[in-house]
Image 1 (cartoon, rainbow, N blue to C red):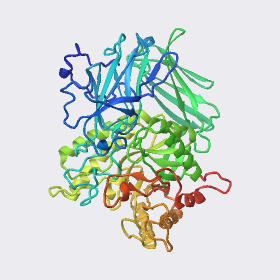
Image 2 (cartoon, rainbow, N blue to C red; image 1 turned 90 degrees about the horizontal axis):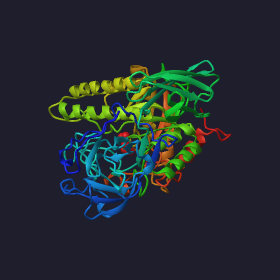
Image 3 (cartoon, helix red, strand yellow; image 1 turned 90 degrees about the vertical axis):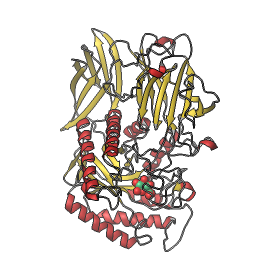
Image 4 (cartoon, rainbow, N blue to C red; image 1 turned 180 degrees about the vertical axis):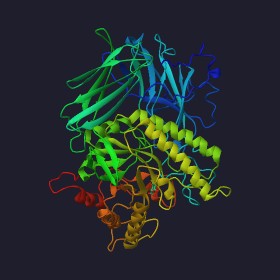
Length: 621
Ligand code: BDP
């Protein structure tokens, strides 16, 4: 659907209604170069300026920045400039360039991979889009704003204010939040650094001026040895014909009101799994007689994922998840897309024998999802709903729910076709909150209807994947039971029962059995771990030493060894990561990584490898 914001000329930009670039009819297909489509990555060095007085819009900074410096896109701004390290206010990015002349006559879109957190886009001085939520792409058609005879100015303002009504919520008042009386600086309700900026590439892409493929949804099932691939395609208001092609299999598409569906049967299919992450290339075309109007190709995996009783089944076979919670975090690039980091991280996941990770606590780069497909890594894919509380009143809860629903919608739209994504996670460690005028029971009830909505949304948007919520130690058990899988973060032996690993293990065993008895669902331990200073040693083990981290992990892994309903063990965390400054975070770092921030193994990494790899060097099931 063509959806430009039509503005008369560039003087009436102030009157322009900002239209949220929330994908509605359109999809979020990864832009693709082929015979009919074009992509131009306009990332690189952009002009940049902080706008602490928020005067840029009134002063038309979308045309020219008064005193810019250069910044790489994608990248966080925080680790680059001393005055920007802790800055979370408004900042401007500006780029100038020609649109490729060969694109004339096509429809042109601008796609921002991730602007953290709130962004506004201007094209040649005309307001074009707004987007909220820092980790998912947004797209706006700019065909009518583009100039062909001169350079186009793209300006994007971005801010990352930690506001209570946002998701993740900012601290409601100074000192509030998950850290109680010991808030970090900059103040957040979550335990990672609030990196800000244009975090993923900014692309221009073109599609044919006639009909084009907006979205593709692929659902696979198994029938004996065969794979059954159901493909739904949407293409604006298109009412013609199309084709599906997958290896030797073909099917016709007949569009009505822009939608068509067809089913392909792949005889003796290779089912996608960590040991054989085989990808089939699916090509969708729109055709008019013998002419191809548009085409889009997608790597797909044929697999199923399901919960059955206490078990998690991949292709009907029981699977146990081994791996980590992670962060997108690296020195200098911050949360900016970092492909070398991703390639190395997958190498290390393979080295250690892990089969999975969770995208704690927000959606990761699309390229990371593509690599996971190709390498056979299983992903619990989480929206940025970290630090939710239900003590801030109905209005606040309603605003946060709207944002969670939007982010879940966008995430599923973006990642639904990745075989690597096996579970959606709708929140990490929500709490009831401690407002004086809301009782705990009322807060639990508010959370229950909130999470029911997200659970229903997830299943409505994607009927194929289990959905989970990651629960806090001591948090309400009511919320856990609403989901297909019970996910829990536990810190016995660290925040509680420090230094007492035997006691920690007993408490964990007691709690696991109680949870299983009351909820009768599979359990994943989505976090457990200990801060560990690389090079700190002692025996008997003491907190912060490498020995203690090994022993804590050993106690947890032993505790679940005879509890088959525990279907996943994710150590917190894969690598050390940057946090705000806080007395519980030495050097503004969370040191629970089994790798250091520059990806060197601690003792715990070798310990896990010895457990997770068979003697023949292959990862265990
Ligand atoms: C958990 C959070 C995670 C923190 C971790 C920790 O989910 O984000 O980093 O605790 O304290 O509660 O290390």
